[in-house]
Image 1 (cartoon, rainbow, N blue to C red):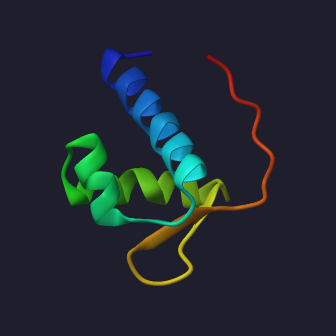
Image 2: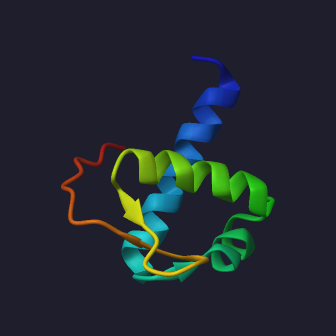
Image 3: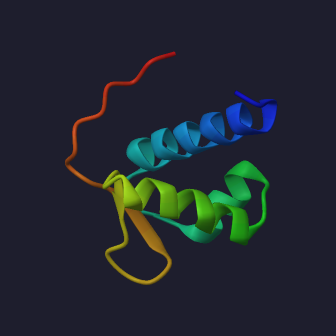
Length: 73
């Protein structure tokens, strides 16, 4: 894979773990934690939501779903 793809996948995995560890978080929490633009955060959240790993219970807030995930290093 390209280095940019690797970075994106690592970031999305880290974002998922952050949401899992912190419960419900806001988009702004993710922007602050990862230091990237809100648009990039939204794209990454869309990937997680498409894969049924996160859901948005209300506008701008995110939480993980009950879907089981096998985490690798």
